[in-house]
Length: 101
Image (spheres, rainbow, N blue to C red):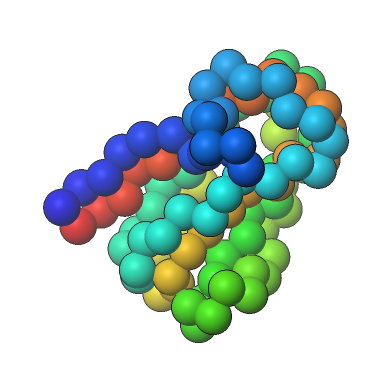
């Protein structure tokens, strides 16, 4: 089953043209080993950190840190159980995902 949607903030609201604080994280997205493509856009330059839970124990490790200003498409095709995002700067952001079956 293909899944699409927005990453959700800690308050359960989507990161859709949303003002966030510096180093704010999304809630974990459970994907259970599926390939995931992350779309990210911000109005301010900063570092986008993608964290993954490889084992499924709730411990997240840094997968990639990339400078971001406008649009980022990042595909994660390794085996993992969950993913969440963190952005280093206060900004207005949109963060979406698309996961393959």
